[in-house]
Every structure is written in structure tokens, then in C-alpha cells.
Image (cartoon, rainbow, N blue to C red):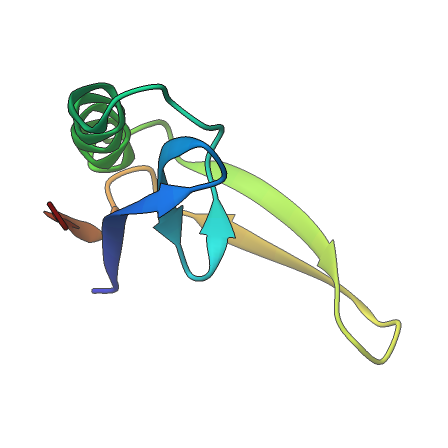
Length: 81
């Protein structure tokens, strides 16, 4: 099972959270960014339906796979005051 960490950080003139180096929108306060990160982390763990997905790899080949809806990552939130 994969693991995703949401990190609350200072960003621009406020706060944001990052996941794998990608920033969320900016929030005016640390508390709002922390709340949003916790909400996003919780939503990431919610199981969905099993679905067929298609994607193209870096070599231009297409793949079809069955994505089980219960295969959700573990998540946590790292807070930086």
C-alpha cells in the first residue's frame, strides 16, 4: 500500500500544503491550511468503486488496468508551525 504525506508550509503571502512537491492553493492562515490538509488526507483514504482505467506511458503505449476502489493509500499530515 502506498503512503501520501501532506505537509503544511509557508507559501507566498500565506500558507499551503504540499503533496509530492505540488502546492495547494494559498490560505491566509496556518489553521486554514492545516484544516484543508487534514480534510484532503481524509478524503484520499475513502474507498471508491472498482473501475477500469486507461493511461499512456512515457513511451506512448496505452495500458488498461482494473483499479480496485478499496486500494487507497495511507495518509498523514506533517505540520510546520
